[in-house]
Each structure stands twice: as C-alpha cells, then as structure tokens.
Image (cartoon, rainbow over all chains, first blue to last red; front, side):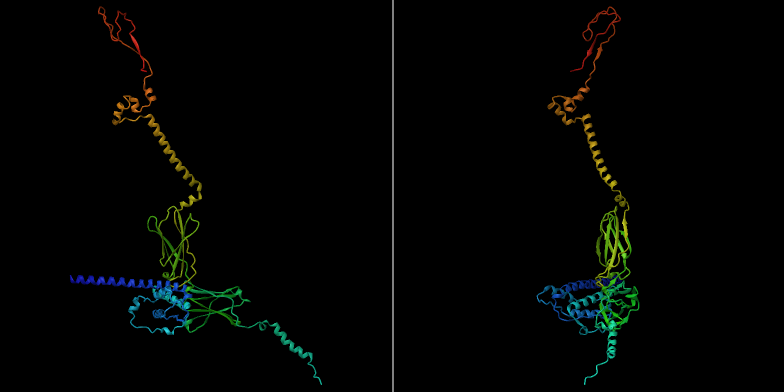
Length: 144
Length: 351
C-alpha cells in the first residue's frame, strides 16, 4: 500500500510539473505578443512622449536578449504631458517581468552581457522600433 | 618706349587649352557630392535569399551601379555583391544567398557609381520586416460534420511566425469573402450548402510576431469543394424557373381539386344522422324525416316512385253451388264464366 501511494505521488508530480512547464512557455509567448501590441500603441503616441534620448539596445548578441530587454524596462518612458494616464498605463505594462523559460532555469552560469550604459542612446521613436525588433527576435527564438 | 605687344601666335596657344576644356564635359560639369537618384529595394524571399533591385533609368545616364552591403555589428565588414542582376546589360539588382541573411541585425546596402565614387546612397534595412514567404501549399479540405468543413495548409518557412488570409466564395457569389487567421494553419467554415461549389485560396505574411512585413506572399493554388450540379442549375435558369412555378401551381391545383370532390360528395352522399340529433327530429323538425336527415328535397322527390301499377286481386274460382259472398276489396262474387276479368285498380303515387 505504501509503494502504491508513493508511485501515484511520483506520477502525479510528473504530470503537474510537465503541465506547468507547458503553461510557462505559452505564458511567455502570450506576454511577448501582448508586449508587441503595447509597443505599437506607444508608437501611436510617440509625438506625446518626452524627446529625451534613451539607451536603445540593438544587434543584441545571442543569449543576452533578456538582459537587453531589462535595459529597455529600466528606462522610464515619460509623457511630455505629466497628466497623461494612457501613456503611463502603457509604460507600466512594459515593466512587467517576463516569465522564465526552461532554458533559463537550466542555465547555471550567467553570461557576460553588455551593460545598459554601453548601448547607443536614441530618441523615443527609434527606441520603440528597436524594442519591437528585440521582442520579435525573442519570439522567433522561442518558436524555433 | 612702349613694350612690344604679345604676338597673336602666343594668344592662340593660350586659347587651345581653353578650347579643349570646353570639349570635355566631364571637367565642365560640377563634381559635387551628388547622391544617386536610383532607390534600392530589398526583399527576403522565404529566408532563402535576398533580392535587392534598383531602377537605373532615373539616372542621368545609364550606369552600372555597384552594390555593397554589411551588417552593423560585423565590424563594418563591407562586401560587394557577388551576383548581379542585369536589365538591358545594365546592373539592376543583386542576389544574396542564405548565408548572408541575419534577420535581426541592422543591414546596410549602398549603391555607388563606380565612375564617380562620391556619388553613392546608403540605406539601413530591417530584414525581418522584408520577409516574403512562399505561397501556402498542400491545401486540403476535411468534413468536420455534415455542414462544417475545415481548410488546412502548410508553409515551408517557420509557420508560427506567419499570419494568413483566407478567401473563399461559392459559385453563386460575385466576390470573395476573406477571413484573417493567426498562426493556426486551419480555417473552418461552420455552415456550407452542399448544393454549392466553394473555392478557397490562402496567402501568408511575416507579421506581427517575428517581423512587421507589409507584403503578402503569392496566393496559393485554388481548392474546390461541393457539388457540381449547382453549376448546371445556373446554366439553365429557365428550368429552375419552370420548377419554381410548376410545383406551387400543381400543389394548389391538387388542393382545390380535393376541396371540390369533398363538396360534391357532401352534396350527393347524405350524412349519417347521429343519435344525439334524434331528439331534434321530434322537437325541431316535427317528424319531418327528410328535413331532419338533411336529404335535399330534390333527392327525396327522386326517391318517390313515379310509375303507376295496376294491382289485380286474383283468387280461385269457387265450385258450383257454393254461396257467393263478398271478397276482399268489396267486390261481390258473381256467377262467372271460366273466362272473366278479375277486378283491378291502379295504385297512384301519393301527392
């Protein structure tokens, strides 16, 4: 009887773990898809953004995409009009942390990725274009 | 004392170089930093090769423009096109192979006039926004239920990066109906008419998950589903109209005929009186049976006998000597001869 309970527990844990890993991958794709929509909406408000130059990573090397994405998140996109709630709401959606993937869970050693200050600074329009390009690259790698 | 003027021969020598300069347009034309007017356009076909093309006709004179390309993070490793495309023996494009494609890196192309190296134009491209996939293939139709069909197809490139556009129409539609489909490679039509012939086609685009391409692929081959009989009905509209008229008219005629037969039978075949209405014979009709039964007067009269019949009493001749008495009907017996006419009377019909 004890062995039966033990085997059932193992099987149940395996099923739950496999299901949660699949949901994690789907959740990442859903989040990235939502981020593209958020960036497209911000691009429509680009004329209302503060024209300050912002670090905009481009041509990010392999396995440093998440690091580059965090550089985009660290930058606070500001509206030229402080009372603009729409832009503030959209920038908050950019700040949400991405769900991890299995590859990142397995990765034990952190790769040496460039710091955010090393990236070229660009105006808000180019900043958003590069952010969208990075998200599309992450989706492409995720689906490959 | 006046100096001797320069001889005319010397002036002539001075004029010759000036004349030579006038004959050579290259020297006279301004050699400023003019950009090339031709615009280069590049597309990445199914992430298999890149085609960059330009139109040299906008140039002042036909020139074999050269193309150079590089990636931003490749240390400006500038390479010249190794496979030019020609139109009327003039360079009009460049073909780059798969090994030259890096989708998510900033890509630069430069057109240059080899005879005037300062004349050049540079352009930065995002290759993920210039991908044009091949048209979808292997279109198949499946019956999900009696009235629902599903269209499926496949793409050669990473299909999860593609969005699709399905167009369909029946043989009775004048235009296509279109429906956008996300990364799924299937489309279902919930209710189809089995009498119609449907046609489907699909095209794909590298947008929006993995790129922001604006150009669609070519349309796929057409695929059909449904009945071919419906085509015949369209080709003979008179037959359809005839059926549309004959069937309703025939049905109406049949119904009217049945009503007429029913009415005729109602007239000729009297109804069987029910026990309930026996009471009415006494109270309402005062014993008039024909009126109570619903038999028409004409029918009642037709049942009355319209003939007259002579009835004669015939009896045995009594033997001789037997007293004579009155027989039935009040006719006294008399001494008759063997041959005598029996008393007769005529039965007339009741008025």
